[in-house]
Image 1 (cartoon, helix red, strand yellow):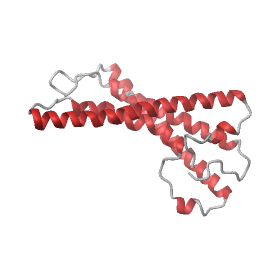
Image 2 (tube, one colour):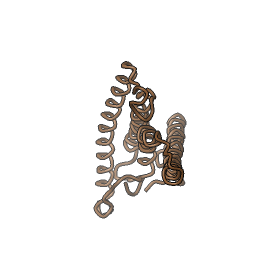
Image 3 (cartoon, rainbow, N blue to C red):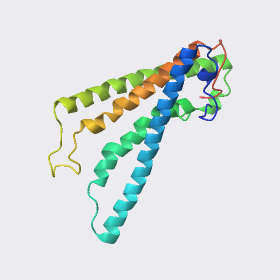
Image 4 (cartoon, rainbow, N blue to C red):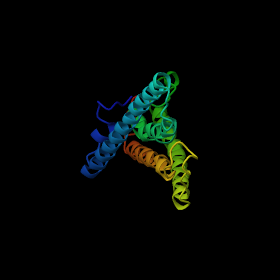
Length: 191
C-alpha cells in the first residue's frame, strides 16, 4: 500500500524530469486538497460543538451552521480528499483475494479498477460542471429567509468538479505510470 511517507511509485521510477515535475505538482495539489479537507473536518467538529453549546446552554442556536456544514464543509471534506485517498491506497479493497493473486493478475486488477474509477470520475466531473454552470447562469441564490444561508449555490456546487478534476488527474497519472512499469510488476504491493 502506498503511503504519503513512502515515495510514490511513479515518482521514483521515472527518469524523465518533466514527468517527475508533473507528478510532484500533482502530489502537492493533492496535499493542499487534503489540508483543506482536514480543515473542513475540524471546522465541522468545532461548529457542531458551538451549535450544541449555543442550543443547550444559551438557548439560541446559530441557525446557519447546519446549512454551512451541509453545503460547504461536508462536500469539501469529501471531494477534496478523494485524489489523496486514491494515491495513498486508502480506498476499499478485498485484500484477502488481491494478495493471493500473482503479480500480473494484481497489476491487471489494479489497472482495471483505475480505468473504471476514471470513467466514474469523468462522469462526476461532467455532472458537477453542468450543475455549477446551471447554478451560475441562473443566478441561483436562495431568497433571504428561504434558506439558512443566502449565498449563490454555485459556490458549493463547484466543490464537486474541483474534487473530480483532482481525482481524474491522479487516476490518469496512475494509469500512465502503470503502462510504463515492466510487465508483472506491482509497484504498490496492494491496492
